[in-house]
Amino acid sequence: MSLVYEPAEDSYLLESVIKRYCKNKAVLDMCTGTGILAKSALDNGAKSVTAVDINKSALDSIKETKIKKIRSSLFQKVKGKFDLIICNPPYLPKDQNEDKESELATTGGDDGDEFILKFLDNVKKHMEKEGVILLLVSSLTPMDKINKKLEKERLVSKVIASITMFFEKLEVLEIKQ
Ligand SMILES: C[S@@+](CC[C@H](N)C(=O)[O-])C[C@H]1O[C@@H](n2cnc3c(N)ncnc32)[C@H](O)[C@@H]1O
Image (tube, rainbow, N blue to C red; front, side, top):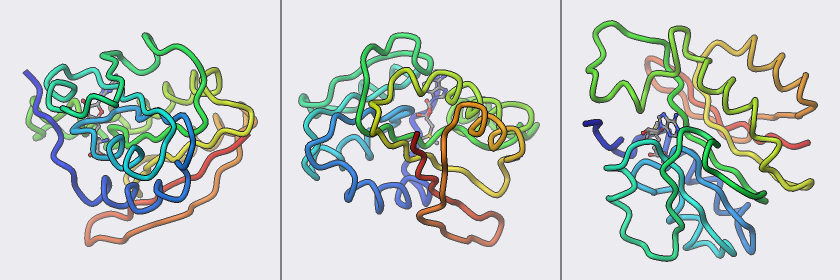
């Protein structure tokens, strides 16, 4: 069984910005965990909110019935397009000392960028033309391949929020077509 990710600085940084993007929007919260960001989108006027996670315990912990829950690995079982796609992904490089139970929520692959690269492979299919992605990245996430992938997909990104902690810097990227 995997642990449900307890909201932390990354969750709160994203939460602080999604408020201004979600009014009357169809929102997808990819990697929802406890649903903190899905709930915030709902509370701030989203037209609809869909929450996706691979971890059944995470989805079971969300009691808000207005949130549509989908158990899926990334976009595998997701249909349709969204105005706003929020994602606080597993973004850290593999750490041999990491607890197996928390790895699912934190480890983005051996280098840390693999999960985000897979997310970017399919995200455009689920984005409305004027849609926006809000993606959390860390200074510990290698950005070279991610930036190349964004360019290849003709997606434009800018940093809209950041927080520096003693061991890493977290950033929210706003990504548009
Ligand atoms: C860093 S946590 C973020 C949780 C929550 N959104 C927040 O901000 O507190 C990452 C989440 O991604 C989920 N996850 C990991 N691999 C996944 C996959 N392949 N597809 C969907 N969700 C996945 C984990 O179960 C975990 O809930």
